[in-house]
Structures are given as C-alpha cells and as structure tokens.
Length: 147
Image 1: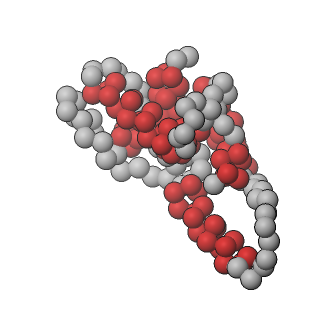
Image 2: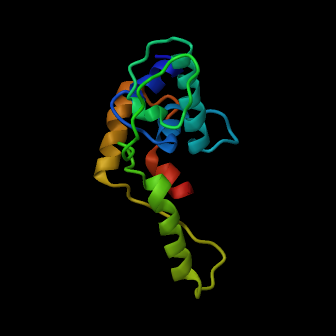
C-alpha cells in the first residue's frame, strides 16, 4: 500500500485530526516535523489528488477548510477526531497548564512524564494500524508523552 492509499484508508471512515493522521501514516518520516505538520501535509497532498480528478473514497469532513479549484465536493463540518477525540487539539494544552501550575512551588531539575491513553484511543489506533500497517507509524503514547 503506498502513502496515498494509506491516507485514503485512514480518512475514509470519518474525521481524523492532523496529529493522528501524521502519526499513523508518517510518524517516523521526515525529521524536523511534528505529527500535526505531517498530517497537514498528507491531508493537503490528498486534496491535491482529489482536485486533480482522482477518485478517492474519503469522508468529506477531512477536507473542511480546503478550497478546491477543479472539483466541488460537498464538505461537511468535522466532528471530533475518531482516534483521539480531539485530545491533541483541545485537552493536551489544558493538561500541560495544570501540571505546570501544580509544580510551580516544587524545585526540580528534571522530571519524567508518562501517560496512559484510553482504551478507546488505543483500540482506534490499533484498528487503523491493522489496515495501513505500522511501517512508519508512531504509537499514540509516544506522541502524548513527548508533547
């Protein structure tokens, strides 16, 4: 399965955020990019394919905010990411602020962060990895701990 086919497989059954798309399809490709940037690039690449006339079975909400020149897909507003439920867009910053606030009176030189993603996140990720493979994928736990 090539990259374009992997992108289409991830995007066909519902909305997937850029972070999850980038992590699942290309999390171990191109150093110097985070998964959100990788996902944005992959989504735009897929949009180029669709605008050039390629027929891809993709949930149209994955193209929300993209302006096409040659095709006029009926694009619906996306719901929550079917993998992380918008954890990376909505909850991660809030959790980070909460940790910083709780640690402000504690003196330390280093600390270690760990996470336990929900079973729902892990199951969604595993289901998609079974379809597209894990060749270039990064585990959701790795991205959560790094951010």
